[in-house]
Image 1 (cartoon, rainbow, N blue to C red):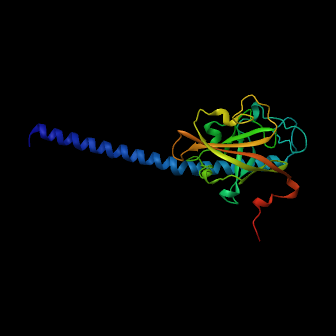
Image 2 (image 1 turned 180 degrees about the horizontal axis):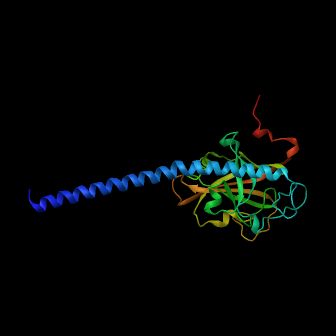
Length: 237
């Protein structure tokens, strides 16, 4: 065997081992993204849900995040409320047990613990556009199957004081740059809102991010917590 041939085979063997190692690293990264981020996010969501429930057991402090369901205007979130959970989104189309906490803000840390409320959009039940974002893949993927939602489905938002039932009006696929979807009146910049709206946003298709799937709806019913969940969330006997 020539010295040159031996060196070539050694080089090929080294390259093969390097490619195998790179493949294993890539496989582990994919497993982390697809499995472990969901495990961590589900645990984080459980903690946020517990925090929200505990917070609701305490008297509401003046100036905290509200929902306006007591007949007064809700106080919007302040700087200290960023990352704080304050409501739950329930979508019966995705299962009667489907419930995701809503936190203030839309950065990656927030979206790994639930769905995020776009700052400066309306609060639940307020006139304007209550807009939220959620992951469709990895990090708990709360909106993984949002594409199953259809017109006339309901989205129920549970707050400290009420159950707010929104009816879905339409769905749209838009570009990531189409920020008009979270305007107070979507698609009508500068127009003063008169309705109580909801907008859900997520990536589209599920395993990519070059589009956005948007769900638009309007508030149909406000139900005091004392009356229990709306019929859409109640199991038939």
